[in-house]
Amino acid sequence: MLRVGQLCLMLSALAISLLPADSSACPFCPSAGQTLLGESKQAHFIVFGTMTNAVRDKDDFGKGTTDFEIDVVVKDHEFLKGKKKIVLQRYIPPDPKNKTKHLVFFEIYKGEPDPYRGEAVAPDSKIAEYLKGAIAIKDKDVPTRLYYYLKNFDSADWAISADAFQEFSNADYKDVREATKKMDPDHLLKMLKDPNTSIARYGLIGMLLGHCGKAEVHGKALLEFVNDPKVKQATGLDGLLAGCIMLDLKKGMEFVTGLINDKNEDFLIRYASLRCMRFFFEYRDDVVKKTDIVNAMKPLLDQSDIVDLAVEDLRKWHQWDLAPKLIALFDKPAFDIPIVQRSIIKFALDAPATDKNAAAFLERMRSDQKQSDRVKDLEQLLELEKPRPPEPKNPAKDK
Image (cartoon, rainbow, N blue to C red; front, side, top):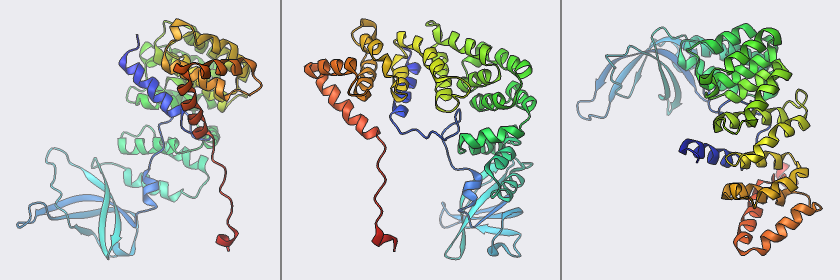
């Protein structure tokens, strides 16, 4: 029986699989989001400093003023000329337990400064210098910028390290790969082993290490790191496994296929192995041949708790020669699960019209009153998945 957490993950993975994939996005990263540099492009000015002299309006409890004493101007504006302090038209009471400074983003609205984003940080934070550095190189090539962010990955200031990590999430894989040429594999391995490194970053760091490390040193160390039971359960296992394979193809593939073949292995570990194979099929079939990737995935077709996810990938990869095996699963009691059967029907619907196995299976499904509506629903879903044709140009509009 599936645990609740596993079921939620499977449903989330299915939902994601229904969305168009961005084949260029950085793998093993969280979803893209706004970074400090991205926000800086919208702000009229950015300053770093201290909130002082908070005064509540005696007539309106919710209003008041607060002085913002400027320590560093991160992004300048004519409004700041000659100013050491800005009076904010808001009451921001100090926290006596936490001494903080703030990085504040402002817009000018009707001639007055309007603060719309603030980052509270420790008094000794280097976030102002970090953002000024990012702004200074914003027009450099992407790999150069990524290398700058990598140097801030292990900053003790969470606001800095989290933002640097987010910059990688927003980057294309080709740029991330190019940036690894300047990276120090020993430093990456040190970050992995550092207990203060967030497990959410394991996947990206493992992948980076796979690009720039050496098999005899970093490959062995990475395999030992991944084999730790706690690490195997961590977020980012897929990127770590990919790093193992890139560093030592033979030993890495043996390790990953061993995880895939073990039906008793935890679902999340087998799912991470599937995502690792997905990475090589979609990005790096120069490292692992596509036929080897498909063969490595086949054992998942006998595992009822994960087969639907494997079938979805095989469908997208047009592995139509597996139609007989997949269709045979449909009637097996162990696979009588709606989400599994849906994935098999989708595979058959997407297969070429000349595929006799898929055609015969769909004819049977459409003649079955219980299945016919399901087939229609999935046909509509597949139509929604298809990329939209480009909008025709309007000559009159372009003039």
